[in-house]
Length: 71
Image (tube, rainbow, N blue to C red; front, side):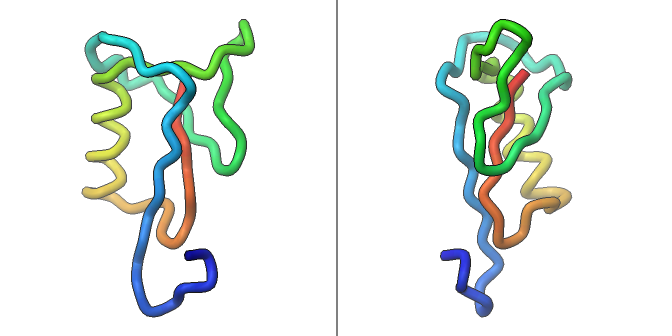
């Protein structure tokens, strides 16, 4: 996919844990490595991962890239 230049693609790699919960809007973006919190956990709420995906659709920041989100 990374060599593809005719399509505008985006690939999201979710964190290791997606937990029930509402949107906080306080997630961080990463690229090829998981985003980890101060405890070393790769986690996010369902509300925040959904929000991150919608944000990327509405305002693309990672065209032809893989990205991840987490706290």
